[in-house]
Image (tube, rainbow, N blue to C red):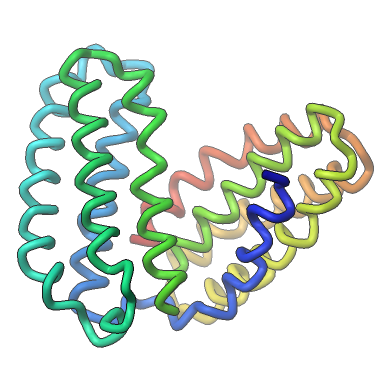
Length: 234
């Protein structure tokens, strides 16, 4: 599948954003669960993962129980924002299935493989919220990171056409993420976003000038700052 086709719908991401704050009790509960899942994935991907096995196992058991509770509460009783979505049940199934995969590999201490499945949590929640017009700043940040990583890899592969196809998408997501953070009233997020915005602008300059090496270096510099604001946004 062509990159342009696969990601074309993300151009409309900002149009579906309804606000920085979650829209319902469900959104708040899901955000809290998502944050714990991401924190656990951070441990799984940590260079010190061998010293964190007990904490990882404990967290995975907890998020499994918490997902079961969310499922029992909402799977057959969707909030108003989601009541017309025929895929509603599938989101819970996808999250549960992925949790089983991550837990199975983690239990075997195969953390590299477990870590590869971590992004499925974010992808599933983004798909759920984008389909229903409840996209929040966390979704937008995830999409920005995804596009920066993808475009950096395309550029390093020497695919000029594919790189150009993604530039407008990155600019669009950055534009609306910047606006949403500035209008959020959250001074912590606004502070954390400053280096994100600057590095992304520098990255765009490198990408547009065909400097794949600098773009790769800038993406590496982007990640530590991204991780901070991504967690703070939940």
